[in-house]
Image (cartoon, rainbow, N blue to C red):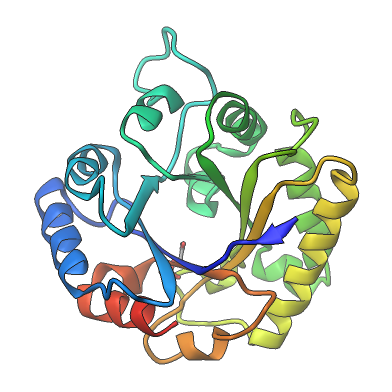
Length: 253
Ligand code: PGA
């Protein structure tokens, strides 16, 4: 399983912006983005803005994706958004199992079906979020928690052959708190995540694989995570909402 050829920087806008401001931000980022930037850039707006952004960015160097997806294929599931629609919009990525969804929207039980749905019914790259809470970290349970999250998430998947996959390691205590992990600590955990995937899918590994770090990345600390083989890129929340900050990170990472 080879690494992605470029580092990937993802802006997770969550539900911080309305439709109008999402389009404005996308346009600004597009203007600032250097075509020859060393890393790939991915925007994750809300579903409505995603539809508009997809029309403008179809042939650009900027990729986009969804923050979530239904666990089912097309059918009577009121309020859900299908992987089929996201394919129509030419989304490249779908975020699955973000800790805010796990916390506020009872996501845990749906994650394996969502992962399976995306892998079975599309070539969109799933980005699975994993990470431990502060208590779990203090109790020395970080790796056990992550292993369990990975086991559960892939419980319906038999093979990753020919697929592309991203895991985002986001410690809960670092998300939106201003506390950031030491890069060396992230590297150790990323190595373990890689090993777990290698053990789980020994004979059917994905063709391309990457592990992103996420949690309070900003202009002051992003460079600490640069040029590290085991860190395939960054998943950025707060700092992705400012076009100048986000563009600077992408253009320099
Ligand atoms: P943050 O969010 O960069 O604001 O900490 C990261 C995330 O939740 O993906």
